[in-house]
Length: 158
Image (cartoon, one colour):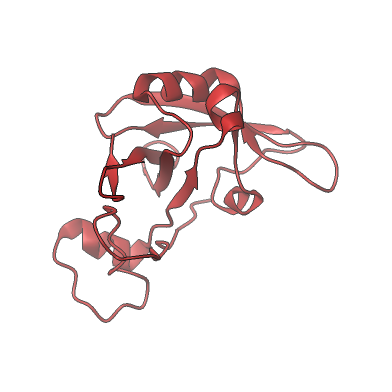
């Protein structure tokens, strides 16, 4: 079953954080490109997080609300694997796991996450952004971006 996502509207100064929030579902603005049109029709929900010490040294702790956007866990499985593509087209396989019990505390396991982390040269305070992409030939995958604040305090892709 496919899931469709809506784009998170960016908050803050509205400057050059490279997130176009003008195409929210229900927006009256006319899209300027094919991708913008697809975003209006299907929507896209960006998942973003600033990295902490735990994230850069071990595993990526993700907010519980991200589980609604992640691929579903099958049966009683506590893990799900999914692919991510970076801006250069490199594919990384990540594994999200959750705890037993009432508080699930989702994390991206070290093996795939640390490969991506090292490849990008990430550090505490950098930001990652996951954007679900519906792929009709394979499963839904995520585009992943990494950003760092420049000397002017604006987020730029790294």
